[in-house]
Length: 271
Image (cartoon, rainbow, N blue to C red):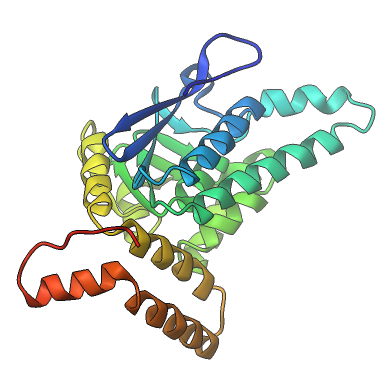
């Protein structure tokens, strides 16, 4: 399904399937894949469809052009300064839609892997940080440069600060300086940096590895990971113990353990 922009017949988001893997590609290369209202809605709609499709076991989020995503579409936002309220209502709407889309990634049953070929800045960096895993070209760069234009990257900060240590997050947010792919891997913003041009192949290989697991197990594990991360230590252990007990009662846990003991490959039923 391709979602069309209201102003052009070019799809702002491309969607493909490779077996059980869904591939979403940001397709506004001339605008450095900035997150226009149309693109945010397209992403949100795609994630809704994917969440309901049990045949999809992993998602790769990629982009066309030289940039992965340059953040919000500042031209689109600035055009609303002429509104009666100076654009306040529209700005609030866009930030709410964007924040909801980022949370959709976190709440999606399937793991989402960012495939970063170029610059990911501001909300683009937020998009990478919101994904469960990330593979990037060694030529890719990351930044939250809002301070350079008088607009602190407050919403990107939420995802960024949940991915990297505080001092690194604050350095990116306060200085706006660019972080290389190697440094992004070092601080945990991405999983690995690879030779330019190999990022799609590496992201797909990772997606296929993830997709080979029980989708039921991945679903409950992903949900538990993000939920326990917001808890205190004792509460997290209590919650995780309950999750693991329920997991032990599932068919795929029984099958997986038996297969391990019997030294054979498990046959998942995703339940």
